[in-house]
Length: 243
Image (cartoon, rainbow, N blue to C red; front, top):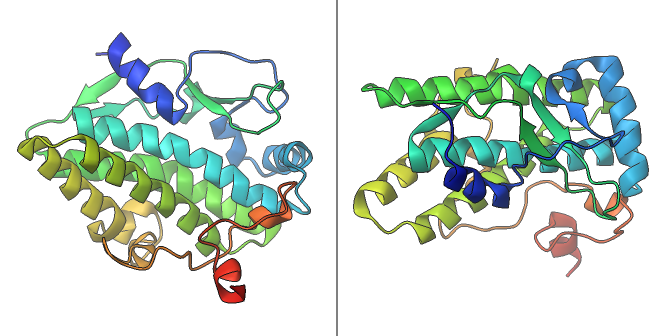
């Protein structure tokens, strides 16, 4: 089974694309787990975004990578579909003519599998494939290379997940679908065991969800001010402390 043309169109807002680029910042994402490749890639990112250091480049890389998370979770929650997560067949592409670095994700194959009768187990496997077998490994490599706190990187991802699910809950009012989306949201952000994310005793996203009416200020600074933008995010704890 493959995604339909309409489904592909819907995922384009999360930066899914079929366009291949020749940019030096185009990379097959499994290669980011190779230390030498990642060091070289971070240097290219640093130059592209005018980052002061490798840690700021690492944080922006995870922010951009969070769109891959959004693509996978959208398909899971809205369509009950798991995209083929063969990371040696997924590319991050860059339009060099754009001043802003906003890479897209190109899947060599948009094959997918439907949820089976035991959806809870199917969902657990989807989360494990996405996080334990890719995102967590990338975060660990970035920590090793740049000495950045993993908390910054996990909060970057958590913010995009919250944004995704709040958007979906607002857009989908059908009771059955709304309930499934909300259940998936709570599972991903709070209830899923740490083992689905890798060598964790608890869910690494949980600490960043403060509830629907909770404080939306970040717990960590994402280092955006250390890029060419030289400004703080609206919810930056450093900005909030100085105001």
